Image 1 (tube, helix red, strand yellow):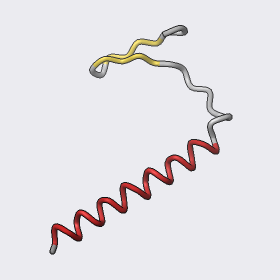
Image 2 (tube, rainbow, N blue to C red):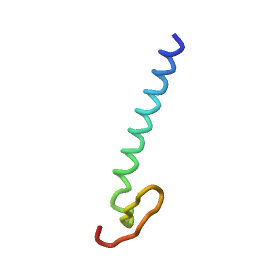
Image 3 (tube, rainbow, N blue to C red):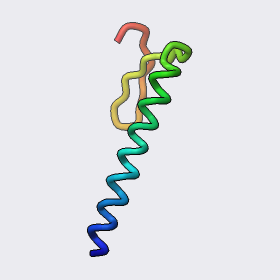
Length: 50
């Protein structure tokens, strides 16, 4: 019974977090101008044309 509740709570929190993140990113997508970064294992390389 505890495992069922834990699974349910984790699923709901993940779903709400994903939905909230998608709402935030779609509304602010035009105002954010981020640089492109290509990274491997924690080492990141900045490049203009990846």
